[in-house]
Image 1 (cartoon, rainbow, N blue to C red):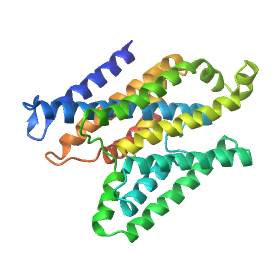
Image 2 (cartoon, rainbow, N blue to C red):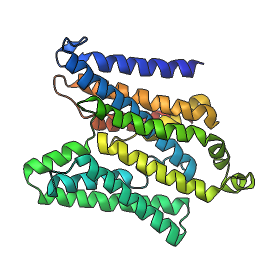
Image 3 (cartoon, rainbow, N blue to C red):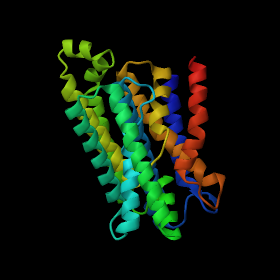
Length: 306
């Protein structure tokens, strides 16, 4: 019960802070445009992206049976950054989000192709994702080297991650994919509970393991790619939220999965609110803050669990 109350408080605290933070201090804006076209969409994007990245991290940790798996384990995040960078440098008239989503799609197709042709196991899939991520990162560095200063600055700013949005549709692009992916995650919870006990055990209980693994890979890639296309790469939320949920609610996914989604939403919302306050009136990119806080927080969580 304490864990549930803590998640609710975390989400409410982050939401209220998001809505009341402005460049001149705290308070509800007098202009309705600022409230409904800037602050509310940003809050929706933070809630949706946080919950979505946490849900993807949980799915991959169950699938790969690796506690270090995250939404970027299979190279999706780095490939999205490469796709966005190519668009910024080569075709600036095209949406950056579209380039990022196409990069995620190509990375996913490459992983699935290698998995099917070579019959890769979980460990090999992780190594394959690392190789894709390294190649994509090298491509981004090459584009930085070839681009002029202004273009390179735009690329760097996008890869830091951010939740700035204008218009309610920008906020819904974070909420709608998470609603779809979240309902799908809750729907397959019985199969996931069996899968985390072992593939042989799940198969003996009637789970189509190979089809389930393929579905998880596709859903995670599309889910992550859509969120990264809107918010940019945001690290550690998808890694740390499942661990925090397991510590409080145990390994039964019927309790752990909803808690993971709630924790992800609350963590990213609070981090974004903090990022807007720390250097006010300037704004610290939330991806930088999650990386700065996520590493020490994850180590502290591991030490306390030990």
